[in-house]
Length: 221
Image 1: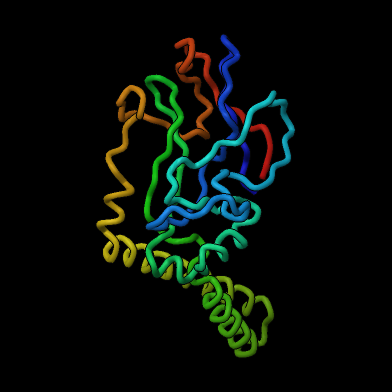
Image 2: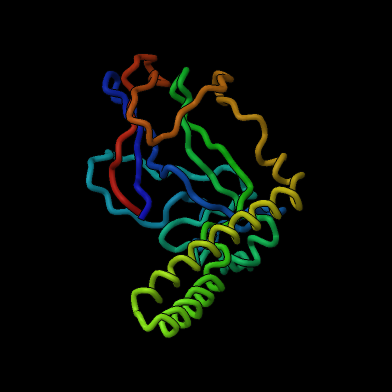
């Protein structure tokens, strides 16, 4: 369950929209019709808040070519784009989006990277792990040996499949990767110095400029 975050200034009470530290998106050549609520560009589809956030809205993806796989209905959104997790990986259209904050002026912006879904190849891995686990357990006559073998096989397969998929994406779709991963700098001040939004440090406030701008967790999605 992704954590919902909000940036707030302790001096002037300026607050940002609600956002998550990162999310996945589908890159399309043509902008989809976002009148369909299942293809919303909101970063989250549902949230439980445990901190007051006034009347703040959820952040939206502004690039019309990116369809946000908003939690917790990412499977429904993906199905409506015409892809499965596997076909999305092979088509080189999965984008990992990270929220970062400029260390110089406190502006929040996004860093995009063409990648593959984190669960790529998991179905095959589970099957391989199950077969190896059963075989090892029977061979050694020990249930826990089988469990350990199954876990090891699943972990190994997952690592190999992810690395292979990542290399395939980076090589096969390098032009798309360069397009999405343009030089990273703050859109407001141009600084190339930024931090993860999960940082506990304080930043300059984009409104008053004081070093009292901080990011706090306010809920979960």
